[in-house]
Length: 147
Image (cartoon, rainbow, N blue to C red; front, top):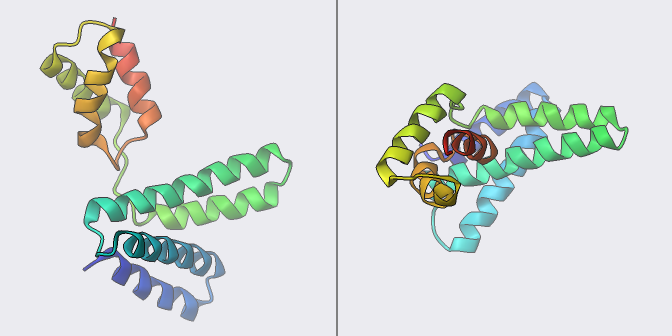
């Protein structure tokens, strides 16, 4: 079943349950998916749906951090609650050990010998971890592994 259909079913259920956090979050995700679909003039594939979901989750994470810095803990908490709802639809995140193993394989595969080859390694590694690992963490791990 397409993600948009799942979102719609869960939105209806959240409305029945009067779960305002879930309703607000799911409406935002639905809107973002619909906008992307309209922008591309076609249905989204799984990778594109995942990309939209990650962007929505990232927005909420960044907003929570900004509200904390701005001294607005109540708004930060609202954003974190919405982030939890959005994360229900994302695949499970990879652990650092799993990322490290894939990074070591990518380094061996590309023949990288130093920091100057980081771009080649990242180019080989990112398609394998996209959607399941934060790019910043991947970048840090690759940087640690390259001499």
